[in-house]
Amino acid sequence: MKALILFVFFISMAQVQAFTLNNSATLTFNKNEVKVNIGNASGRPCTNIGVDENELLSIVSDAVDQYWNRAPTSRLKLRAGSVKSVAAAYGTGDICNSGTSCDPNPALAVDSDILIVCNGDPSDHNFSSAGVLAITVPNNISGKDILGSLIMINDKTTNQFKYKSRDEKISIIAHEIGHAFGLGHSPVKDSLMYYATVNMRKFLGADDIDGISYLYPKQQPVTCGSVDLNPDKKNPNTWLGLFIGFVLIALLNQLRYLKLRPRF
Image (cartoon, rainbow, N blue to C red; front, top):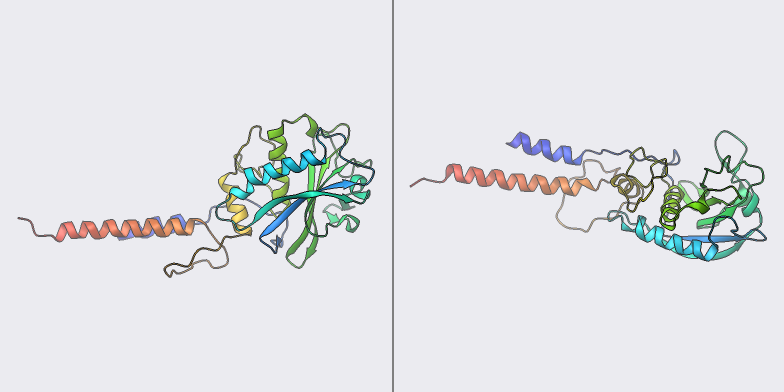
């Protein structure tokens, strides 16, 4: 029985993670609240995606509240910001300089938080096909801190974003926001960060929650002391493992009591 208790306890603590990061340096925002703003590029507003900037901001509000702000084990809170005027280059410029990997274009660096813009990209460098709905790059970095991230929505006349339902647009924007704060794609199909669009997705998957909690772990309340077997990685399953262990120990003690109790 003791061996069983230890087996269950350590299995519950094992880290089974499928999420990936969008960089090799584990970049994160260095604050607990991040705003998501909409950029109105001078002379190049959102004209082809089926919604204007104010409606896009409403979609952002639903995206963060329906998805990321429901992760109970993450300290990160995302907020819909405001519509801001930005330089015309955000509407037509390349998000990355030339190269096989993305070297962020410094002309489009976002000062702080997350900025979403509509981009027409006449060069086809950002959107190689109408099926590329959006592209996201953390493009203002200091050390391991993300200062600002840029999300570009495909606003070319051939884009497919405009044909999506509002719920689909919400999940697409929520997916891109996940990239903006540090997550890569997930191979798990029920995850928001799955690499392909899944129709009628409504909630975060367990892998999404693991990912945001890994990057932005929520501090646990101070209660009884415990031993952290893996101090470098926060795992929401740790407390579940402790609970299961304590329950099984209590059951073992009860069985021992029944076995030793005198019989009349």
